[in-house]
Length: 527
Image (cartoon, rainbow, N blue to C red):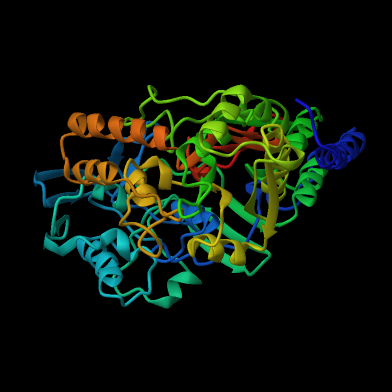
């Protein structure tokens, strides 16, 4: 792949850092100080709110998933399986009956009952807690508790994806009567319990020995907040931490660290989607031929090989391949510059002065991987006559702009559990889900798609719903409101003293429930 000077400069800078990492690593050993039962884990940012009814940023949700449980949870294929509810049934399309496990206790010793579930949901529905998750429960008509172990949720209208809104990570159950103090001292029923938090420094969790499932082997996890990726890599190399995070290091850094004594890299297919979105209000991008042309002009396979060091898989849908509703037989956009040129000509955009057909602006965050991706896309699209200008913006400004539709193109990543639910298509592509009601930021409008989205939303038969979702994915692939670039692998660089790391597709921290610390003599420390 031909590369621009900016591409060379950035890769040279990262390469120099990685060479430095390699040169300084010889002879390093584990130097983590303190209790041998404590695992030191680096995270990129301070969680915004540890109340599971409120926090929606990645760090809040990941930590909440260790401290709290949902009514249900999801397996690796995104099937719903038991959590606090050991079973459930839907006697009709408007009613969900959950049967809670007996003997479950909160971390402070209080027994879990149906009253806690009702309080958690009612506090969101009533507005008592200013929760951004309130929209997920807008169709709930009532929450009933006929006895201490039974919860009945009645909906106003059918909603096939409702069950996903009560999974762990989507919502955690708090004790009845909980208020604002949950954000600073969360009390849940999960495998780990909260000990302390020092803002912008660290959060300490410890094993819950009374967990209703298998209690973790690790005694404590200290989450240290280190925003700078280079610092995280250096700390891991020195052995002062055990885990460098999940997806928290640049691909080149991971490759360099993997060569060092005492460091291992665990990698597995992930579901986080990197994409480029189009604004349909723009007179150029309103042409489907233009959107398709830009997809054909993007050499995704080469970008994965060199930009991401192979740590990703090509994407053809917002929904990941491990999902039960994924449809593989959709229009594909392989690298084909000649086809891109044909489509741009057909759309009425011939080459002009200097070979340029038109100019576009793409907004990105200031995060390094987003900016680097933008630079490479500018280089590739230039070859088919499209001049791309980049606008890196501070996070708050960037998110505000794209929510207001103030962009031509932008690039972002769908993270966490959001794009693991088939209802993602309604959330991002329905003409009724433009901000603030959803994430159709590009104002995509297709009446035929809207009709299919309405059908799948109320279809409770899974096989029939899958047929509708297949048609939705084929239609979206033709219209190309997104360029689906790739699903990022879940990559975790860690000391070889940490064993049993098996990362779930969503990249969650639930592997800490099963991981263990091995001592210098080879023994497993902990339980």
